[in-house]
Length: 512
Image (cartoon, rainbow, N blue to C red; front, top):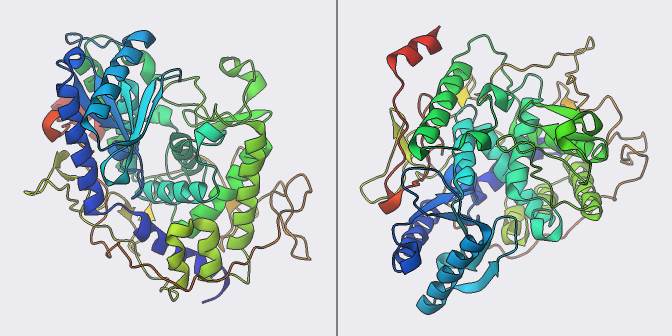
């Protein structure tokens, strides 16, 4: 197997390796139980609940993903947020309790952060971040989880992009690069601007600024957001008129790199809006002024907050270089699985490069680790292990996941061209750019949009040792059923979050 054909099976092999196993899920549930016991022993947190959020709840975490925890302070039934000093005081109490218990490492109290957090490494070498009353984070995680239900390729690409970003050291907000939430939004935006689109602008799922609607009685506010998202997502998934995007995982990854490079090259004048599903001129968007960031990726649930606010100008150059080096390797005619693995994953997965090429017909299967939905309700197996019955992504008759209708059109030449000028894919699956981004000269030298030559292809020797695979071939897709929502437990005692069943009126309006 030569050239471009190597990319698809290599990405799928990586996806199997980074997908969380049953033990990975159980380890995180165990840590949540431990933290609940610690919080229950603290007098100042009497009556507080412990709620996971972030990638664990949205099901966008890899085997090595962090665990985000919110300690919810009760104020009757109303939504409230303690002041910064009160949050710092409560987290200091948790810090003392963790030290007293022992068994934790790398304890760090970041009191002056935008959201004060307590960081530590607990059981199973899993990093944990604890914050106070982070309801907005919980709701963002739920909505991203529901979006997984529209097309399962969204989750696949998020996991691959996160692993790739860690490999190139551009997934660390503390060092001035991208946080994982921003990477998820970038993949979401990519899916919104493909031809045809796979995902809709988020205003079609929740037409409002969610952060402004989290007021009043908590159960009422949450149910209002849940119901509106449920109706809109059901309408989107049942729309038979939408065009089908059958892009392969390799095609999606390559076009993501090309689009992300274009975003970085225009970052001084343009930002992206996943809420609107388009690029916007910063100087024309009064909500984004004054321009003070190197990169602007608007948080669609907390407008006009910038999810890329930590990215510095110097690190933006590093991000662009990582994109170019990776893209150059993925389109190289001299590639092999080892060279691909070297630019896609870190040393902990370098053993993948020593494997023989896998068949292009290989499909990704997952272990039974996703909470199972029956009529939209999350369930657990008798052992307490979340189990998945089937996958989320709709499939074509050929077995390829299919997406919803897109907004952009094709050019007269037949080459997909987005209405905002982003790179699309040619019929061969290779990203095509009408503005010259990452175009090859006849000599084969890759150049960036501004004419600078990119790094030459890097060759790395095969590692002779191969670690034992800890990842069994998995047997089920890790997503929700087509007609319901589910996600990881967000309530005490690992009970499950259950969406309200649709009313008859809502069902009739959706069917219309």
